[in-house]
Each structure stands twice: as structure tokens, then as C-alpha cells.
Length: 145
Length: 434
Image: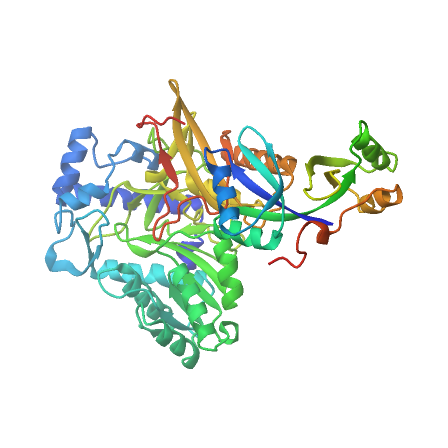
């Protein structure tokens, strides 16, 4: 599983900027960032190069942070590519809670899709279907700082 | 029971006694205290009542009356007959002075002996009185009661916590009397000194003089390995000994042969039905040195309906849940921040740090509770956070009988205070709005 940071944010001007600045000051480089927002608060999800350093830095800066395990899978850069991935999970009855994409620089140019699923089998199912599921070492230094 | 003939007196007989004492009192203060004479005359009431219900026609006494008649102006006995004074430190300036006759001191000792017996103490106990001795009523009040009950009494007074621990341990102390927060400092200090507080002979804590919560009780009882009993009193009325929990730990029995308790709606000043919260108002039935008639305490409590398993017939008041000064009115319902605190304490996922924010949307007043999410919450799921928000809203609505908007805020985002936390933020006067 890939370690994703989930940060609770109040809807307040400048709050997301504060978060990014805290990460920048800690020397953390983000790979992907996704904001899920409601009318009153948001949850920011981050994939970065040093998740543990990032978590410490954010907590020191006063943010509420938790680490969530997600799947990162390479998606063929063709129409219907993501649909195929999701169908592979769907036929196994695995529910996707949320998903977002990023492009990993320096790789084949394939998109990486981040998936939060409600089932431990997700990783294995995707690999069995022939997809490349990324390991922590592919994205960041797994031992953190 | 220290005085079962009073503490378990049949209600009917008790109410006769109360009325008899009330009439004696009213006649006495009308005769001796110019303030009461002019209050009664202005209100057109005669100091003779046909029933306890008629008390509702008698004017109130407030803290300012005592300040205005500093120091001796409200005494109902000649200074010749006063044997002691205590004073309460006014947080807002002028101190208030209360005087006691020999009989008052004796009654007080009885009431405090009842309190200690109520908590389970007997003449075999060793009582460490760690309330301050001096103008504050706590130390001497508990001291006299402890001696009256026949306990070995240690007048150590407050402070010097390491010495407190040494004495607790060396003297085989079984009852500790102090403020609830101080008992936790004692526990902490004992641990620092390498003494396991649970290994001490200590078995009872008699704690008062500040508001505390049920959660704090659980914490104190576990850390010290004792039964923690809540006691209530205020110097204007007596000092410690006005009301005390029994071993049932469900409400504080009011010494109703010496005091009349009323619970009033703080706005209308009319009595609320038993079980509903309101301002606690006391009338002293037997005090000679200084008597208060319908004294508005500003403390919030309620009468716990029903009989107590301990056999005492004195009614029980709930632990103090707030002060009228903190009260806010939301769509006609009186809300005390402490009630919100209680609700939050029972919900996992939120911290007990909150602020009630009053604002305006157009002409409408708005109320919003800002609640910190717990720092160790799993923040990933928006749905769960929304669920948490709904839970807080519905728990507040069911506990307070009024629905209040809830906003989840980041951990540690609500300002911390060294002293009294700022729980209510009123933005209605400013241009910010809600």
C-alpha cells in the first residue's frame, strides 16, 4: 500500500496555502494533491516523496493529519484505460471510495491512478489482471525521513 | 447519618419546621437589618408567611447587597454576639464579609459533620484538611465538622504539595478534603515522589469549592484509589456544608432544615419544575450572624426528583453545571456552555475544546458551536467527518432541546487559556457577522 496523507482543513482563505508552505519548508515534494470539500471543511489528500517527514511537519504546524493506505496503479494512456482498471475491481465486487490521477515524471508517461478501495484484495486483483501496481519505493522513500 | 432525626425527617414534618423557622427568620431580619426592612416595605410584603409557597413574594438578595453593606451592614446579630468572620475574595473588587454567632459555628460544625458522614467517614477516620485556613471558609469549615464527627483532624491548610503527600502517607490519612483539581496535583506529586497514591490508606475525598465534571471524578477515583464526593457551599450562605453527595454519588443532599433551596428560571425568576435546570437560590433558615433571604447564587443546577436510596429525605441538587453569567439564550432555550462540554465528552472523535459563536445573519441571531476534531482522528473519509458533525449536532439537540449548528474545526485551532477558557464568542456587536 502507498501512504497517502489526509489532512483536515477548515474552509478558510489561505489555509491550503499554509499547508503547502509547511510542506515546502520541510523540503517535501508533492506528487499529487486532491481536495475533497464540503461546504464547511475539506480533506486534502497528498502523495509525496517523504510521507513521514511531511506528517511530522504538518502536525508541528498544527494540522490534523492521518496516514491512509491507498493503491497506486499505472493506467494505460489510451481511451478507456481507466475504465478497464475499474472494471477489473468491479467484477470482484470491490468498491472504489475515491480516485484521482497524476502523471509520474520520468516514467513511461503513463498516468498513475490513486484508488481507495474498501477491500484488501484490491492490490492482488489488479496485479492478477496484469496491471503494474506501484510499490512504496517507486514513489517515495518508504522508511520516511 | 450524623443527625438522622433531621436528615431523614419525614417531608411533611420538615416542611412544618422550615415554615416555622422561616417566619422566625423573617421577623428577625425585618427587625434587625435595615436593608431587609426597606426591601420588604417597598415590595409591600409582611414578614409573616402562611405557607412556604408565599416565599415567592419576598424580594431577592444579591451579591451587590452584601458589597454595598460592607463590612457589617447586613449582620442580623450585634457584633457582641459575633464570634467569627469570614470573607470571600471578590474577583470583581470589593470583598464580602460574613459573620457567625456561637450558635452558627455550632450548626455549621453539625452540617459539616453530616457532610463527612455522608461521604462515609466516621470517628475512626483521619482527615487531612487541605483547604486554605483563613478568611476563606473552606479550611475552618471542614475542620470544625471533622472534629465534631470525632475524626483525627490534620489542619495542614493548602499548598506545599510534597509535604501534603508526606503527611498523607506518614499519618495514615484516610480522608482528604481539598479542591478536586488539587487532588490531581497531589496524585501527580505523589507519583513524582515515587509513592503510588493507590497504595496509601486514603479512601475518601471530600472535594468542593470549584465546579468539576463526572469525567474528572472518574479520573480522580482511579488515580487515587478513593471514592470522590462532591460537596457544595458558599460563604454568603454558610461555607462548605450547604449540600453534599452521599455514597450513592447521585446528587447533593441540601441541608434543608437549615436552608431553603429554590431553582428559578434566570429570566423570569419563577420556579422551574423539579428536574429542570435553573439558578439556585438559597434562604438561610437558622443563620443568626448574617442571614440571606432568597440569595441568588448565579450557580446553575436542578433538583434531582425522587427519593435517594441512602434514606435521607433532604432533596438533592445536581452538581453545579454552570453560572448564569455564562448562560446564553438560543431561540428561547437557556443554554450553558458546560452542557455542551458534557455532550462533547461523550463523543469519540472530537476534543473537549469548543467555542460557542454568536453572530448575526441579517436581523437573525445565529449560534454555532465550533468543535475541534480530535488530533488522532482518521481524517480521510469526508463521509465519516460529516457523520461526526451530524452526531455532534444531534447529541447537542437531544441534550439541550434546541438545535445548534455545528462546525468542525482543526485540532488545536481554538485558543487555549491558562485560566478560564473563553467559551462564548459574541460577534453580534461587530461588523464581522457569522
